[in-house]
Image (cartoon, rainbow, N blue to C red; front, side, top):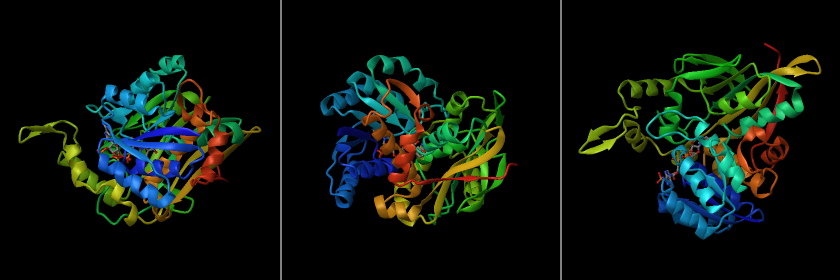
Length: 398
Ligand code: NDP
């Protein structure tokens, strides 16, 4: 039985709190801390109503290493689950090292002043975590997260060696708004307005944002327009899957979504360059976030399903083969269970499972790790048990 502290009371924090509270024999004490106390209290209230479990709440500014260290030293959790924003990754890793607490997150570090996410800043903590005897598990959401574990599973059980990986993320849900993002708008828009990038024959190839697309026929949700994006798991998987020839990431968007995004970009609303208004310096994208619907409020309105998976080709027993490993998740079922849409659910459940992997010692290994570096089997079993069942189908070779 373990005590955990969850940092961040947004859409994903809500799911992690509910899912941990559903397993009191594993997570016997839960503290939820975030910048805005009343958001923690609202989540604690629904957790109490849904599971009967009491979780404690407290206010914290996770940018403040000293304050977070003090909180961790006072609470003495075994693990910190970081579901605040990518900007807080390094300060929270520092606080974990100061207080001797294991660490898990769902997104890699991104400097607030530069729309650039990379693992180099977090990988630089490898020695410090190793020497402290602490585990840091990076990217334990769906993508990154489950997609990395799907690749590790394919490597272990389905192929003698993998040649290509296409990660495909389809959200065929509809929330009824003309434009809204399914998770933190600032992080989401920063991600998709960057150049696309993929890895082939040992080099990175860069393309204009949203310039490469395909119609992909997904199980259950059918044909969707999928656009090539750069996504953080490409960086670690291209290093950790041996002999890989190519890896790409695709996400589906509707024409309506892309038209809104184009207009917002053209008028400067997605910019992170600060502007002055009434003596206040703000990034236009921060303002945009304030006027868009809160992703945490989309749950009740969102209908339809997501399908996220890995389309993998490679060699098995001398034969070329192609398999798709995937999960389908229903927005309304998620709402019924934890008052959330499927995007937060598919991130929060893997964070809860990653937490169990660490506190149960199955993945407790001092150092800083990406998900595919761990044994996929216990994680894959837990996905079926805790709400994200997966399937494998064989596909015709292209
Ligand atoms: P939200 O914006 O809904 O929630 C973020 C929460 O973090 C808010 O409660 C916010 O507080 C809090 N927070 C922000 N800054 C601080 C700070 N300095 N100190 C303390 N708390 C802070 O985001 P989501 O829940 O949608 O996403 C959470 C994380 O999950 C993000 O890192 C996102 O990138 C990641 N993610 C990962 C996915 C994956 O599959 N791997 C998919 C989707 C998301 P306040 O309420 O005051 O704003």
